Image (cartoon, rainbow over all chains, first blue to last red; front, side, top):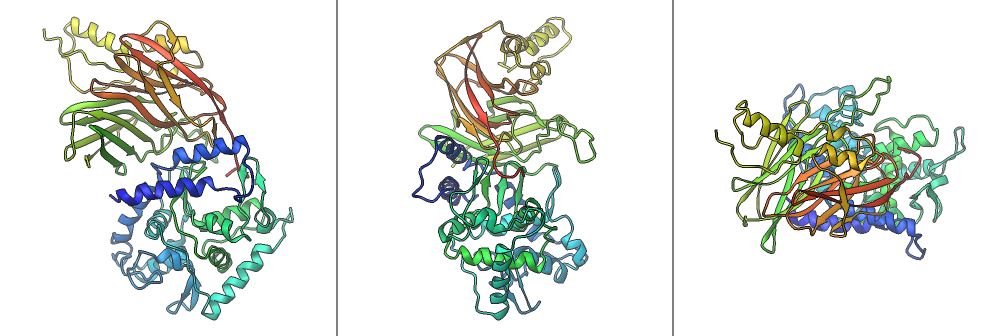
Length: 272
Length: 103
Length: 156
C-alpha cells in the first residue's frame, strides 16, 4: 500500500480542500468550521477503494477479445499510466481527434478489448449501489498522477481548436435561465448556499479546482469524474444533456485543463 | 463477495494505530428509488478486530454509520510485523475479512 | 456446566439472555459470536430509553468523555467524530444522533488493552445533538454536542 503518498495526499487534500477562497478574503466562522470538516475527512478517503478496483479492472482481461487495458496508450505511450492524467486531453493520431481520459478509455475498450462503442459508453456514471468500471478506472489513473503538475499541450491545431471551442462553451449563456459556466465560475467570491465557487478564469482558483477532480463526492457516495462534473453542471444550468465523451465535453475539459496549467494533481480528492 | 478493505496499521509509540476503510453501501432502508420503491436496508452489523488471537475491538453498527465506513482505533499488545485482522458481517449475512501487517 | 469467560459485549441485554440460556443448560457458551442488539437500534430520540435498551439504568453527564467533531457538517451523509473516555474501566463507547430516525449509530466494545478512543463517521439526517454514551465499570455516562448539518451547491 502506498502509505507515504497516502499521508502526503491527505495533507495536500486538506490544504487543497480548505482553500476555497482567494487568499485575501476573510473567512466567516461558518466557513472556518466547514474547513475543519473538510480537513477531518481528508484521510480515509473512500476514493481509495475505487483506485484499488480501477487498478484491478485495468489489468483484468475483459471483453470479446479477452484482453486487458494494459496496452492502452493514454498519451505517454502504450501502458504508461503514471503521469498520463497530466497530459490529457490531447490529440491522438490513431483516432485523429482530441481525447480526454474517458474517451481514451472508450477508444481502448473498443480497439483492444473488442467492445462496441455502445457497450464501452454504457453507464458511465454509477447509480446508487451500482458499480461501473469507468469511474474506478478514472480514479486509478488519476491517482497515478498525484503530486504531478498539469501540462496539456496546445501544439497540434486540433488541440488549439478544442481549447478555443471549450472557452467559447464556458462563456456561452443560454437555456431557460440564461446561465453559462461563467455565471457561477466567472468571478471571485461567489457561492451557492454554503458552497464557495472557484473562479475558473483566475489561474489559482482554476488550478485548485481542476486538480481535485475526480473526487469522492460524499453527497453522492461515489467517485465522480470531470465528465460527470461537466454533465452535472449542464443539468444545473438547465442546458440539454452534455453527452458522455462528446466533442463538446472534451473541448470544455481541454479549456479547463489548460487553465489549470501547473496545478499539482491531487485526485481522487474528497468533496462534500 | 464484497470489495476488500483498506487497512493501515502503524506503531505510534508502543500502541498500534489502525485505520480501516471498508467498502459497503450502508443503505439505511429509508431511501426510495426513482420509482418510489423503498431501497432495502443493507448495512454492516458487526465488526471485529483481532491481533495475535485476541479481540482488540468489536462493534455493533446500525445503518447510520456512513457509507464506505472509516474507522480508527488504538490498542497495545502487538508490535511491528504482527498482523491485525478485521472482519465484518452485514444484515444479508455477507462477510468480509482482511488483514494487514503492522508497520 | 462450564460457564465460559464473561465477555464484555456491547449489549448487556443480550448477555443477560445468554446467561439465562446458559444457566438453563440450553446453550454452550461460544466464543466470538457477536450478537446485534435490535432493540437498541430501534430507540427513537430518547437517551433514557436507549440506555435501558442497552441494559443500563440511566446515564450521568461526564466531563471525562470528550467528543471532537466539526461544528458544521457540509453534508450530513458523512460526519466525522472522535470520542475518547478518561473514565476508569471504560467498556464501551456508543454514538447516538438524537434526531435520526433511530438514535443509535454505533456501539464499540473496548477490551482491556485497547485505548478508549474511536474515530469514525456517521450519518446525520439533520442538525442535531450527538451523544457519546460510555459504559464504564457497569455504569453509563454521556456527553453531547450539537452539530449543524448544512448543504452546499445546487443539490447534487
